[in-house]
Each structure stands twice: as C-alpha cells, then as structure tokens.
Length: 383
Image 1: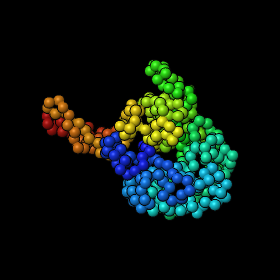
Image 2: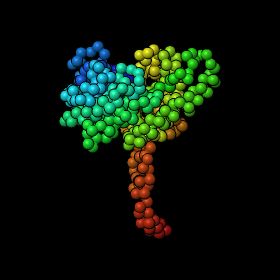
Image 3: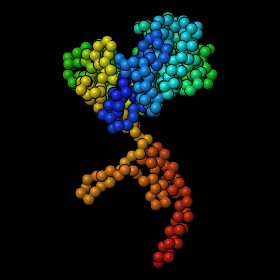
Image 4: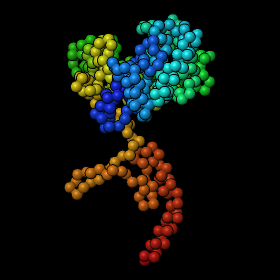
C-alpha cells in the first residue's frame, strides 16, 4: 500500500520526510485544485509562487522522482456542478491540454480524481440532478487525457462517504465514452472520524465514556460505511483508495472524536486487510473550522493520532530498501551492520520480511540427497 499526505510545497515535503519518515521518500502527495484551470497552474502548490517557480518545483518534486500526486481535478470548469458541457464534449480539448501540461513536467503517472464528493445533494459539485452527465463527462475526461502521448494516469472515483447517493448511476465505466481497455477507477471516498454521534464538546464526557463512544461509532458507523464502499468497489472489479481521511480536533465543525489513535490503527488494519491501493492523510485545517492536522507536532493537539499514523506508515515506507541487522557486541549492546548477507555458505537466505521465504528454502533443499551423500563421503574420509 502506498502512503501519502496533504502537503503544499517542496520544502515541506522534504521536511516531512526527514522528520517523520527517517529520510525516506513519501509515495504520494494530495492537494486541491482551482476551478477554471486546465493545466498545472490550477494545482494548489507553492502558494503565492509564480507559474515558472511552481512548474520547476513540481518537476523536481514529482517529475524527477518516484513520488506521485493525487490531483482533485475540476473537470467541469468554473461552473463546477454543471455537467452538461463536459458530457457534450465541450471540454475535450481542455482535458488533453491538462494531460499534456502534466506529461511535460514528468507527471504523466499522476492520480486524477475528477470532481470529488459529487454523489450527494450538497456542495457546488453535486451530480444529484444529472448523474448521467457526470458519468459521460468523467468518461470523456479519461478518454481524452489518456490519449495524450506519455500519459499513464490512474483515475479515481471520489464520492462523499455517508451514503451511496447517485454513485451507482454516475459510475463512468457504464458510459459509451469510456475507453476500451481502460481499468475502472479506484473508488476513493473521503472518510473522517466525525459525525453527529459525537458531542459538540468532548470534555463534557469522561475519558472512559469517550473511549466507549469511539468504539461504538467505529462498530456501528465507520466500519459499515467502509464495508459499503468496499462492496461497491468489489462489485465493479476495482479497489479502494483514500486521499482525504483522518481525525478531527474538538473545534472541527462536524463533531469529531478528537485525538483518536485507535481510529488511525483501525483504519490501517482495515486498509491492509482489504487490499486498499493507497492512503493519503488530510493533514490540513478544515475549511469549516477545526483541524485534521497531525504534523508538524508544534501545530497540532492531535499528537497521539499523529504518532499512530507515523508508526503505521513506517512499517511500509522504505521496506524495499536495504535493511540493516543488529550484531551483539562483547558488552551486550548492539551495533548495526550495513547490510544483511544473502548467502551463508552455499545456502541462500530468505530476504528479511519476505513473503516468499519458502522459495530459497526449497532451492536450498532441492538437492539434499546429494548433499547427504557428499557429507557421508567426507565423514568416511575423516574416520
């Protein structure tokens, strides 16, 4: 599973990697997009910087590395929720323009989420009244962007979490414009530890009452919603991903569970057990008030949740790089060797943490009868 977070500049990405990921590169960065743009200028990145500075920063941060960006593209333009023009093809050329601007920066492998949180009857991007137009416009966006040389985008279908709404009707793979051979989009609901089941003031209940309430909300609300979206994805031959999820502090406008590390651990357990493609934590202030921020620690009171997220991510980040082993010294302390041997004598050792540990073992013992005969001959010579 790939890991990411909401971060808005090259310098902050590097700071985050040094402080929280032991210097390893983060897989994904998620951000926002300004409606009306159809090139990289619409990406929220390096706030306040000019176009040239933004382009060079994007190229260094993503185009010249393995990092990828999740882009919440406003594919309907300035009239965010008017999906008739995209469905008619009025934006086809703009989609190709957007794709070319990303490819030119080396970002042709970006993850694209056209008009997220569209499925319910609220917000400026609601497709409740015209799900078929959303469906066809989305499909045309995929077709045109993927037609550009060098494009290898991954598309994401990003509903609001609380119920299906028009998500089934708006599913773009059903459209006649969906390109043949294109994989279905990753289903990517936004997901927070929040809802009207929490009290407005968490200090109004005891710690034991809060822990009990958090457990009840997970069992009776969060997990059923996760299962609903997982079933939705499975029925459409695709998987889940998350670009916008997290905890919320007590000031969050939609009552949240506060500093809730158990929610973080449970989310990671669910994601790993259900083959979720990626997760991107929404490390930001909320537009409606309050905060989801877990980093930097000096800017948050969600410390335990941040530590939980960091510990979960470090299980995976850097796991494919060379690992070190600890060797006991004479005084009982440990020193680190720079690398782990892959062979011992003529025998192959399994890679540390390998899921295929049995393969080298099978290879080692494939000629065991010959090895035993050879050993017997050597013993006879010694006698």
